[in-house]
Image (cartoon, helix red, strand yellow):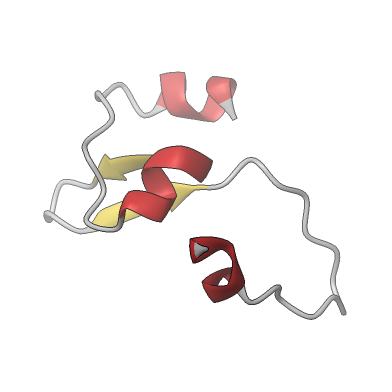
Length: 56
């Protein structure tokens, strides 16, 4: 993920959701949209995990 982040040539921004501050890196694209890079491997066919359970 670090290689991809360096290629973006921009600094990370604070995400709107604090969950992503702990589990990912957020960038803002030229149009102002937030892009979240998550350092987890996803395999086609996997069911996405419900992260709402991580809130405690």
